[in-house]
Image (tube, rainbow, N blue to C red; front, side, top):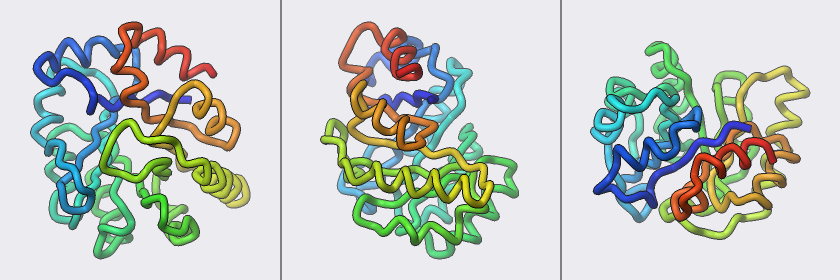
Length: 212
């Protein structure tokens, strides 16, 4: 699996050194929250610009914001390689997928834990990634929701049955135990936050997580 560290729990006063401490990660996950779609506010597109000069990682940008169709372009212009938006927040998901692809960027779609997974079915042939939230979005350090494993299995089976080529990403409550569980269910990318940033041996943890 690919480990995509989320740096929400890092020391933002030492942002450059914190990002450098996970330099072996291929991806870097941006949790963008607007305080409206989810309760918390994190940062906006300027964070991608700030980090871009000292990161060669793939910028994995998760927009937990209302009206993503009005802001997605700012994140692309700031350096996002992949823009993931929420089905619940988009006025016209098909149109937004098309617009992001026209910018020659990868596009992902996500749902909250209580949204039915089969609502994503019309978009599965079109997206590059599906993000399964294994916690309620808006706050780090939550416990992994085991029903997300069924969603991963569903997406993995749909992918096999229809020869789709999207990646399955999981975000929330990932540690060595849950990483193994999601891997077995069919996950390709794990988003890991506090489990990495609350420890000193971060690069070692990333390697271990990618090879559980």
